[in-house]
Length: 261
Image (cartoon, rainbow, N blue to C red):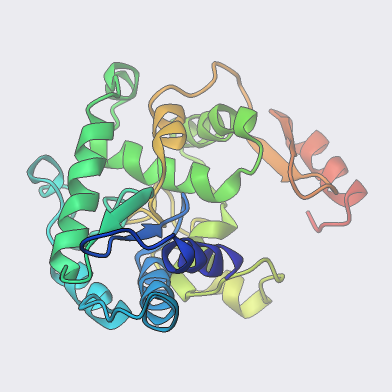
């Protein structure tokens, strides 16, 4: 919510210039389509009250348009759920009050394609992962990491678990599937939920990305660290993780940090 307010303030407090009004919206890395729609709504409200302009673009229209938008052609065969999640590149965008939702979404998709073109997918391909798989992994890396240096390590855990046929066991995918934000502990019933986004009970990747990753997470998903880690647990600072290839060591650290194992 803080990021939404910040993005809105950027749009609202920019100094007026001569000529047509230009607004700015900032989408933080990792935001879901739903949170992007919230940001659009917040920017619109503050633009009305602070800049005295009424954008055509609304959060409701943005969300509705996103639900019918198509991903880039190269991904459509793998996007079986017809989801635009993952393709709305998170960045700062300038727009005019006359823009429609389709204009902003089209710009985000073009920006995604420009950044995607920077990736070398040869390593992922050698592991039998599709481009869409890489995008899904990048969305998990984005959601799971706060320390930039850990992106490639989290990606490595995903790759290693997939290679061994192990469930990924990433709570962030379940939270996405159930629409649960924040970090409150998941209940026993939630952990047993059979949503396809429950990577504790279903092997393999979730069916779609769980957010819209930025370039660093895309790069990490394409080029994970060359390590044998299979587990990680968040340290008490809530920023860094302890990584290991040993289940016993993982459990010991989880208990030490106050988690269940």
